[in-house]
Length: 195
Ligand SMILES: C[S@@+](CC[C@H](N)C(=O)[O-])C[C@H]1O[C@@H](n2cnc3c(N)ncnc32)[C@H](O)[C@@H]1O
Image (tube, rainbow, N blue to C red):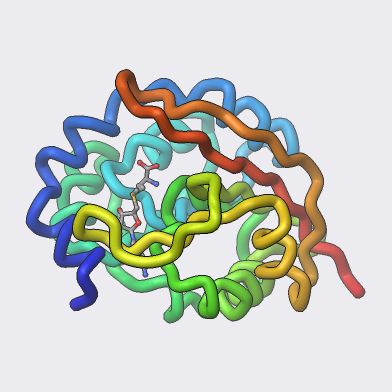
């Protein structure tokens, strides 16, 4: 088990309590505006299951994955659906999803692993499908408060996707929606393009 999954296993209850009620409305609206009604979604690193629950309530068919067994259990309790307990590197779907939602999750990968994971996510998208991802803004990479983080800027995200069939459709920065958090987030919506 890596330090990040170990951290989430030990702090699952606190993590769920601090994130499950976060208001993600404006992010949902932007992402869903690119998707067909009742489309197939992958919630990639679903944590508490907050977003899986919302998307399912909106009529989307949601597959949810997370690498932390304790969070998978909690997300199942919240959503009433099975959560696949797996790491991003095991993703092997072929043209399955209209959209992939990777909210604050890929940020735990080392930067050097991002290109191959973006390629796996691209392969899992239907042609023309869309991917949302968010990273903390900056250049830091390494352990921070018990978890591994790769912060990104516009430039380093470009580097991570440059070998993929993804293009940036929209990119914007936001403040953390949780109170008393001085963090800036880099939000990006990408689209799969046939090359
Ligand atoms: C900051 S939380 C975000 C959770 C949720 N998406 C949200 O926005 O509240 C990061 C999540 O990614 C999961 N995660 C971290 N590394 C992972 C990996 N390599 N494969 C799959 N999930 C991973 C963690 O278990 C955790 O649930």
